[in-house]
Length: 479
Image 1 (tube, rainbow, N blue to C red):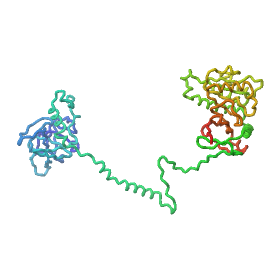
Image 2 (tube, helix red, strand yellow):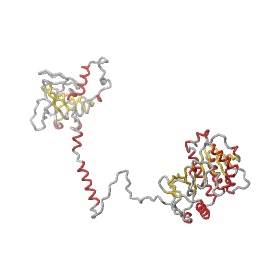
Image 3 (cartoon, rainbow, N blue to C red):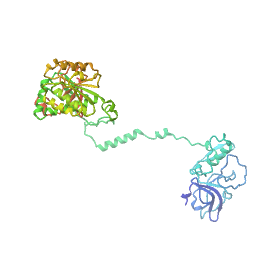
């Protein structure tokens, strides 16, 4: 029962010395009014008893008469002491001193004496004192601006004293000493103990063995093999070289070696149709990126569809451009294909042209039918690696002049080697498999993976390791 009533507060109503009991009227427990009007305690259940002299900020008279009050305003004379009074247990001499008048009783958890003028004041910090949480619905907390509303400052102070005790502002607790508490922690000793335990757990190391280094959270703890940046070797080194974004060196090859490489791939099963399809997919993906990608080609942007003009000739490079235009048209791009009416064309060009007609793209045979205004992108596939006489044809010169006069950027697919100047100045050039030594007028060089098997390269004397990584089109920079 004693544990249930620790911190109880009430007014002493009666003390029965014969039964060794004490009764509290209108008790409070943990700051909440008890549902019963009176509680009786036995001396066997009381471990410590203090008679408190709760005053209201005024100095009491020399010998005040006991005044009985209800609730928390019970008073006794100033001669009452706050020291604990022993309560006799069974078999001990009984004493009625200090229990003859109604007084208030409280279980306190610490006290501090502050000397005031004329008398000693006692301030207590109650663990379970009566607070505003136990007030009724009709008892409102005084506001700070109560004086402006007609409430006097004395009334507010009296209510605060009744609620929280007298002189609480004068007995503030001492601030916690953070520096002193931190000084109790010996950081060096703790880390020394941790290191000792780690050495014991790892066991003794042989003489001469180096202790493993400690790594930070952002350091690589795996010992990797040094990167070899020259992973591609050609039979005749010394030509023009490029490098990727990661630093891998990609050497260029002459057109004759490039031609042998494609012929060996075709012998192993990589036909021309497969290469055309792969080239068209990679070139269209690069073109879509140059056109703006997802920022331009969205369902909500149908009124600003990009326009691409394809300039193609009657050769393999022209067939690659037609394949690229087919994929662009399938992705919602307005494609205009320029291809003159030739008497004889390559069979691959005829097949690609038939497939392009099924996409709804526009095909023109004359330069006068090309758009008059600027377009978003021009893809140049007019040049051929072997037939240089096409540049003398009137349709070739007219198409090249139109492209140079148009302000749209130019992308060249599989341009010829640097021995010939480009009739159309390009901003980007896309090489296939391995780059050719292109001229400066080719612009920025990109490399396209057309699916050449790895066993094809040793057949022509090339040591090869793919530089593409996770991509099919990568940029190349002059080494």
